[in-house]
Every structure is written in structure tokens, then in C-alpha cells.
Amino acid sequence: MTAPALDLVGIAKSFGPVQANRDVDLSVAAGTIHGIVGENGAGKSTLMSIVYGFYEADAGEIRVKGRPVRIASSRDSIRHGIGMVHQHFMLVDTLSVLDNVMLGAEGGPLLRRGAAGIRARMAGLARDYGLAVDPDARVGDLGVGLQQRVEIVKALLRGADVLILDEPTAVLTPAEADGLFDMLRTLRRQGVTVVLITHKLREIMAVTDRVSVMRRGTIVETVDTAATTPARLADAMVGRRVALTVARSPARPGPPRLEARNVTAIDAHGVKLLDDVSFTLHAGEIAGLAGVAGNGQSELLEVLAGLRPLAGGEILIDGRPVAPADRAPRALGRLGLVHIPEDRHRMGLVTAFEAAESAILGIHREPRFGRGPFLSRRAVLGDMARKMADYDVRPAAPRLKTANFSGGNQQKIVLAREMEREPRIVLCGQPTRGVDIGAIEFIHRRLVALRDRGVAILVVSVELDEVLALGDLILVMCGGRITGRRRPPPGAADDPAIVSALGLMMAGVEDGTAGAAEP
Image 1 (cartoon, helix red, strand yellow):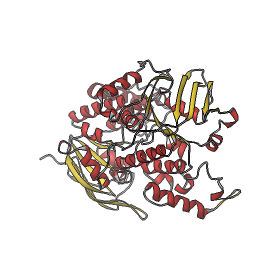
Image 2: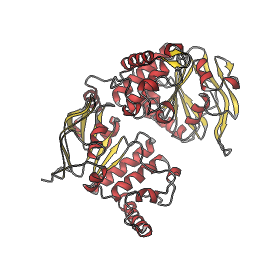
Image 3: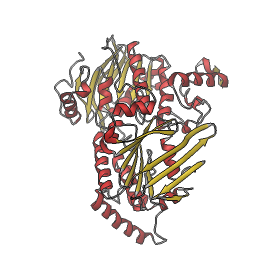
Image 4: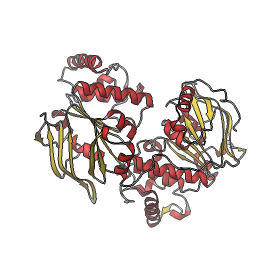
């Protein structure tokens, strides 16, 4: 019998009082796609970071192709044929694709000779695996799908026959994700072993051969993918029965809360980003904004949140135009508008801060946190302890650096900060990006609870299922314009006709109601 490509035996790892991995046993068969699922903070990324040499295990053994090995650094991992593509890419935006691929593998002091060899091998990967990418393109000019391809090319050119992908679709559009999965199937046919870390059960069912479930630092179940279901995996991840769709009563919309009238925005080069966008968001309803990434959804959120200037049109809150002096985020906050940004690292958190400090960003001047310029440490830590309990942030450690929390728990910190401000309008960008199934259920319930209290909510998501699950009103954007709007019936996510119609609008086919007044 062929030895497993990768064997982990009794792996344990702690960070101070936090036990990230506990007695983990995992066997990955050669030439398969093996999925690893679990809640945020379950230990998935830590386990694979041990395999890749970012951390060294406190106990246990790693075997590669049946042989025990010691992996103390990424160099050791690469030498044993293991490559890893991280959720946040390790690329230098200002360098070319070729330069990025060569970093650390220059092939000697004569860079021209090394570059020629890399070009030839990249052409071979394009031919054999469909991994075509322009070696002379500047990485910063590439879309995220192509940047991810560069990371895969880097790993394969270093001799990887075990490829670890950590949340690879977190920043991809549905079409880019489908392309990635086709690529992974090709790699599998060529004998490459793939370990896929993801929280998206639909992806696990679509592309993996076998799946392991992690919970609280250990593996609780490993099964053939064909022998399980999404519901069973979700229950195993969380340790209880999980609702895969949020239960909600019909919306009872109140008066208009937020209105955009003929909103236009342009960039620094004069390119129009938003073109005559109009819609109305009522109290007590969720509007879901759908569209392929890059079609104006992010820019619309930034305009509404006061982060990008208006080039034309107007924005109204409670029927009154927002004056230019009130367009700053802090002034909008006083009007009851809060913003949960799409990119929590760039706009929502300071990862070098303690969690308690990140949880008061923008609200630190409130009297409950201190007097004048002086913060009350006791008040700040007490506030964070309460938020951690209410929002199930793990670990419940207010003084832990924000960077040391998993992505889903970082998202909960942002949500707790903004949702606890008693908002009247919530602008929510990609609320569950990089978040596990249990946290998705939690976040969706919180949003619906706010809606039921009369809050007006705009949700932007590249996940059409999420837009349909939450939206009382669906708005579709393409090319900076509203191309359609719908009020979907219950269960719309399972209706192929509705999904197809929305897909056409996302491609720019207007449905005839794009400029219509709200029903």
C-alpha cells in the first residue's frame, strides 16, 4: 500500500493558556483532496502552520510519505515537498510575478540564468496544469484570483507535491472559486495531494474526497465526503444542531431611513465608479446588495459611510439631506449610522492593539470609557469582557492582541463594537467573509434581530446565498449601476429561476425595474 502523503500523530500546541491543538491525529492519502473544516478558533490554521514550519509542535510527530521528519521552519517544509497558500497572500505588490516567484529561489547569483529557468518552468505549469499567468505582470495590478494562482505556482515550482490551501475562496468571486476547483482537480489528477481548509460546506462537498472536522483543537470526525452531508458536518463542527438557514418572520418596513438619490462617484483619474445610483432603505428591513466583486458595491458603501466624496446626487437620513459638514463618519455616527467594513484588517481593527482597545475604536471618547483624554482601563476591559460573552468571542481574553484571534472572532469584535452602539442604520460589508458555519448562524441572527427592532440594514455580500437568505429587498449592481431589484419570496435561494434572474442582472442585463421607485 502507498504510504499516506502526510501523517500527523498526537500533535499538540499551546500559546500560553490557550490550547490550540490537542492530541491531533490526521492521515492524508496521497493524490487526494482532503478537506479540514471547523469553527474559527478550532485550530485548523495552527495545525497547518505547524506542518508548514511557522510553529513547532509542543508534542507529537509529523510523517511525510511514511518517514518521520522534523519541521522547524518553512525551509524544512519546502524541502519535504510541502507548500502552503495562506488566506492573506505573501506577495510583494510592487514586484513582477517573475520576481515574486523567484524570491528565495533565485538559483544562484546570476539572476538572468535563474529567471530564464523559472520562465521555462512556469510555461510548463501553464501547459500541464492550466496555471497560466504573465510572468512580467506587476502583482499589484492582478485580481485576487490571479494573485492566488501566483502563490500556487510559487509552491509548485519549489517542488511541492503536498499543497495546503487556507481558506482559498475567502476573497474570490463565485466564478473565480469555480476556476480554482477545476485547477485543484487537475492537480489531483497529476498526483498532487491537496489539503483544503475552508468553512464553506458546499465547497467541501463539491471538491474533496475526504473531510476531517476539528472542534476545540482536536479532530472529532474523519469521513469520506460521499458518505456525509452538509448538515452532519455542521453539527460536528459546532457540537450541536445548526440551522443552515436563518429563521425570520416577514419584514414590517417602516418609514424611509436611508435614501440615495442619483448618487455618483468618480476616482482620482476621473473614472466613474458609481453611476446615478438610487434606492431607499426602510426601517425594519434588510436590503441585500448583490453583484460580482468590483462593480461598485464597495464604493457605494464608502460613499454612504462618509469615506468617499460624492461627485453628484444626495444622501438622505430620515428624509433630510445629509449636509456636507455631516458627511464625516463620526458625524454620521451621531445620526445613528454605523459601518461594518468589508476589510476588517484594513478598516475595522488595529491588529497590534489588544482586543479591548480594538473594541472601542471610534467610540473611545464616550464618557463611559473615562474622563477627558484619560481612559479607564477597568471600564475598557469590563466592556470587552461583556461583549466577548454576548458575542461568543473565543478566547475570552480582552488583553490578547487582536492579531492572535482567528478571522471569525476578529469579525465578532467589529460586530460587537458597531452593533452595541444602538444604531438606526447599519451598513454591513461582507459580514461573514472568512467566518465558519456556527459564526455565520450567529451573525445572521444578530442582523435579523436588529431588523426586528426597527433598524435599517444594508448588507453587501459576494455570496448570493447570503443575500437571498437575509434580504427583504435585493438590489443588484453591475458596472456601478443598479441593474435590478427584487423582493424575493421565502426559500428564494433554492429557486433556480430566481437565482438565474439575479445572475443575469449581475452580468448587466437589467430587469426593467432598475430605476423604479421602491415598492
